Image 1 (cartoon, rainbow, N blue to C red):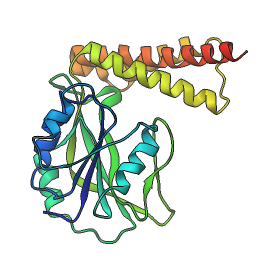
Image 2 (image 1 turned 120 degrees about the horizontal axis):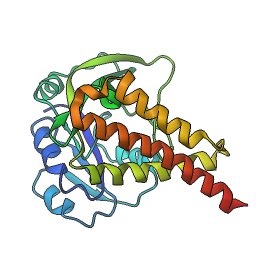
Image 3 (image 1 turned 135 degrees about the vertical axis):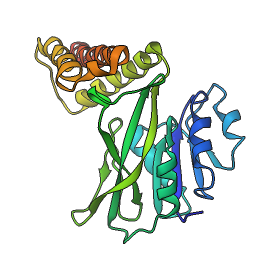
Image 4 (image 1 turned 90 degrees about the vertical axis):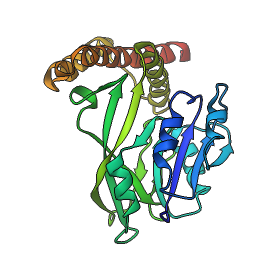
Length: 252
């Protein structure tokens, strides 16, 4: 096993977290699951694996992930969501992991799935994120949504072999629920920053979102799944600005 900790923040992830934890077996003796009040069978599923389970309040994505990282035994962190399993190739790479120094972070490719369809194009195609880093140098910011890693200027980014298998959603309804939640969170984030929206922006931005993801990014090559994802992303854009408008109206 490696001297790295795997940190997962979750809530009501009973449908997906089992696959994630199964894929991680043998990589580390310090797998942290930080639960934020699950009411489904998440805790029962987690109990079936050799992990460190913690329970805590939800403080937004950035702050909650920082708190979960502080519980890790090792300085090197593999940060995952509950619906993000590791591929066989990624697992092999992690088992051979020998970091050059703590000022290097590792960028990992994502294979995003909508149901059983691997989305190779559109918004989710060619996706990648920095998820392997040393917490003494790099950590999450305090953003409530769309959190980012705070990295000093001397940090080098390197590609890591393998992929995270991200189960975006099992169904259209699941995906819509998830995106509606993100729309509300981002609207609140914009409102807190004093950002306002032009009257036509919600319409123009949502139309452009669909054109960009379905046509320009070749989402149509993913078939029905690509169309559904482009439509839901357009709805997310519309709802985000619609909610932002409502927040400003209610503020008056």
